Length: 365
Image (cartoon, rainbow, N blue to C red; front, top):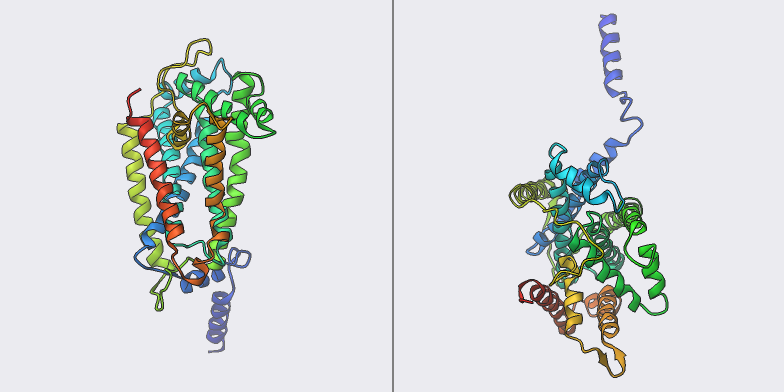
């Protein structure tokens, strides 16, 4: 009888003893936090899912980018040929490259949708100003990712589109020309340019993006998701498993869409760049920058003695700055008021971006 009691005591002691992993990693506290965490759920909550979509696509970008790095050669003599090798010789290389390209564009699209949904729902109001700031900077970094990666295949379109983009940096006051030379590494696009763009794309931007992403996610966890203005009785759902399940379903649908696009509309390689050839007709940057290049076409050469292109860049930059600082000047939202000035500003911004981008793609040259 005493032996039996001893065995039961030993068994109970063993069961209560934490395992090697749980004694070193606070899994119990994490599970406890997740079991009690709730998120607000309302008519606009579906728009918040685009933030998770962008996160998923960024992870896809990292995974496929690492695989492409094993074969890509960042030189003017071998960059295009290495992309051809990936697309034609490497097993499933064409698919990995197509997934990488499509996920990059879908990620930026998801970030735009997420940003404007947050804007119209006034989810940037106090105390969530820094969530908006970090999210806006993530969008800018994602667009910079796209700009730096566009040149790497060294095709005809990417070469001349990058030339147009780097030439616009000359319009930046005081440091414009220095910025252009820093990006190019020379007077024109050449070997040093590809090396610098490759370093920017795979070594400099990713850690910066991850730091802002961590800060963005931590702030959301600390402050919680925003609730609609004027809501007295908010409905909440458990983060796990309810919200996680809904987000997971959306992720599966997005991965399915990404697979369909990558397989049935594979990303083309294009023609190799020839710096001595004339620029092809209708050249334009990637779609998320076409609003800028298209806008400059409608501005006269000089306006009140100021260079038209410079005036256009300054105006667009000012608009972006106003948008970036909206949590700090929209004090109506802090008082629970949806002021018409902010709404009209957002609607005009959406109309402008969609119109300029559509004109660039559908207007015949």
